[in-house]
Length: 197
Length: 197
DNA sequence: CAATTAAGGTACATGATGTATCTTATTTCC
DNA sequence: GGAAATAAGATACATCATGTACCTTAATTG
Image (cartoon, rainbow over all chains, first blue to last red; front, side, top):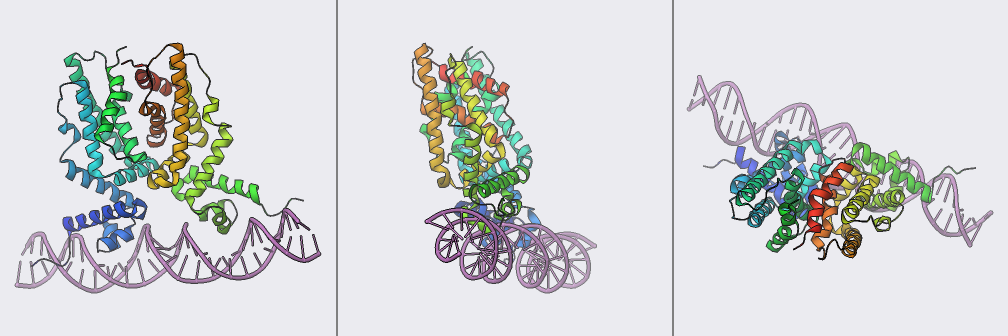
């Protein structure tokens, strides 16, 4: 006989799904503990026991969705594509899949909170940045090995692909197409990364 | 004899200054109509008569501060600097002065609202984008005239300087120094804009 | 100086917060 | 199997902000 009361993971999942549903349909600002509790058919008390603030719930929600959808860290998904141009396309493709997996509304909410409450997300972001830079260092090493470049990428340059996709997804709210990614590589990234001084 | 009650512009200014003060010291989320009214020593009713929502107040506040501090549109401030590199430095310098004039906290709030409520700020942003692109078209024309380039800039490329400064000011919350602007030009913008295909 | 306009004040229903306290269902483990 | 521990669910309360309504009072206008 199945129990009447949900507990532990099952309840957790119900809460997170309820929160996601609210964010997607009504926006992050409507994701109050009160509404999440109602939507998840539980009580506010239960939410308060797990999360101190909506920001904490948001944080948990992003982790939950990204790990489920991506199946691992971005850097492990990267495969050598045989040329600098193809490697860059691979990087932006992977990062865009991450945005699509988590969802634009959710990522916008994260950016909002990040801009409001820098400290709260700082560590998380630094770790993300680290992983991004590491991916670009692989691209750099590949290109050097192939003889496509001889110079090093700078930190600022290595942040570029991620910053630009962030802008497009989170600020401009555009749905990013494959065509966009190609133009991004050809018009911006390739000139920056293949430039010889 | 001066009147006891402030009216019209004087009152308007008091409200906007109060709102700015709250945003700077406590953050945008604390800028409730209730607090603004208290801070400006007026009543909530007065605020409601002028602005429907905090977003409208925010919008008015940015216009108020940017026009006061910049003294005009950015594009009118641009002067030919004699080389593509110097022109690019001029562009990012002007745009950064705009951020500094309005204030990072305020611009973060705008981005937050923009990401929440795309439609509300859409027109405003498109006009800003237009003006930015026009400034870059001048840079392009200058460079062609000097024989530094022969190709056209793409739309995506022309958005680049503004997007990157936006990221730095609004998302990363860094204080942007002259050294940063120089690196931005040398490591990213110049390779993109001087690239010959 | 009367009429109009706008500021200032009060009140109320609503919804969300954060906290506290209590009951009740479900596990855990002896 | 049953007592103890644990976590869910329910209720209540003070606080704060919202949006709206209605009223009074000061200042400007014509």
